[in-house]
Length: 109
Length: 116
Image 1: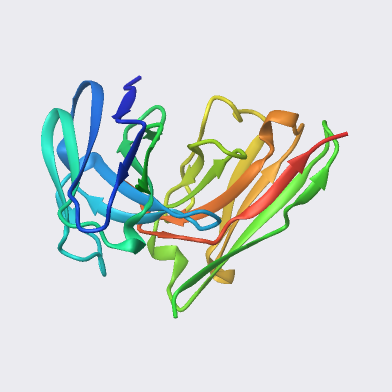
Image 2: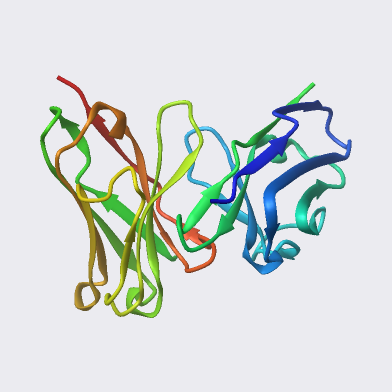
């Protein structure tokens, strides 16, 4: 079973700053099976990135995903107030079918 | 507007049962693999169950295997989760979500509380 580790656990930044979130897999994975979600308090998760680097519908271009093998990154180039949230990485597999990282909380400094 | 709406949650005693429903509107559920995820209070996301578009194959997390059953009624554009032998640790917000490799669209979630 692949384990996903996210770092940092939390990030305090100001609007306009750059956020860099890391997701590391315990073994090499298929990039097309790696996704990122944004979740705000009291809301359902929202898909941000699929296939490691493809922005989901309606996601602004300040969000970008990159990486391969075991190391993946979600970058928010210039934080907007609505970007403060928890971000999860997720991997599709066979058993279990979906694995999530523990999340990175991005909050306002 | 595309929607997934969960229902059937609530308070149940340990050992009890609940059946969650997820109704889709403005898109055809039958075209998609569907999933249930959950999130315990203050915790992260956990996959629960998945079912392929035609309903022939179902998958469950080890933590719910033998207690939960996912099903679908494509004619009614609906997804279900039968939850039996509920435990305190099943307390969570349950979300239905569309997609095979990732969840590209999620319902708003429904709270299930298992407590005596």
